Image 1 (cartoon, one colour):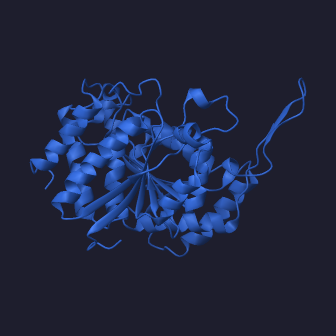
Image 2 (cartoon, one colour):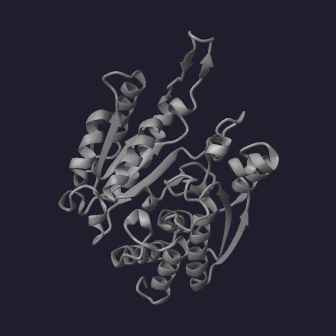
Image 3 (cartoon, one colour):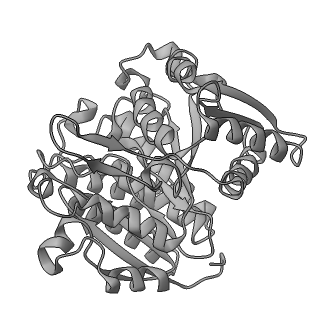
Length: 361
């Protein structure tokens, strides 16, 4: 969409657990800032995950995928929960099918330590201060999609098989995303792999080196995943853009949440293809606190800020939301996972208050 767009067609997938609570929060912020900008928000809700299994027997109904493909952007809450763990199909397969169906191959997960909120991290303040990392995770390949996979045989000889597979084109396209982002930041790309053991990682490293030649102003460095998993916690300030494959990216971005102190703060955006971008907080469905007003809405609200930037082309609106989040965090107007005492609704109202008071203008 262009910056001059006057309407945003949004599909909302609340999903399971705390998903409906945090998507409601993100929608409230989107409505507030878009209304002030004179942009109409047209939002429609559809089922996904366990919610969809209960209503129609499958985790991604065809009607949901069709609606998502026609939207300008898709906002997802979370999928999964213990009530569906023993069923013939898991809610998470709906999310994987959605990513595949939309052709979103690059998952952007920014990990940013807000000024004044360094004390929320279990890591020393002087270590995390100023950390600002953009993780670029390949999203549609690797072990999550490789074949063959499954469990076969009978006790005591059962065997589980997963296949890690990557083609050169898959690696190359996500590498270009990472390098283009780095050009707008501090011009350093860190590629994370396991090239000393895995053939797919050896290919990954070769292709990253080839793509780097197209970006002479960007520095490329390679890390083995075991080494990086330590260094990102000891020296987070040295990293700018980190690109890695699907499984490693899933694990490393959750680990990096320690820099900010909670998964509840982390947003994400998935795209790169010709279809709409998909936005979702990183934290998952958290079924143990669902419906209690304890969910941290800031990850979903920050995902909405990414939506404003990437799908609407409104950097000004995205920065307004992010500055409001920063003000709320510095004021301590946060949920229990961030050592606060506010409810989901109260934190959302605090963000809205910052916007309406002009603090973020």
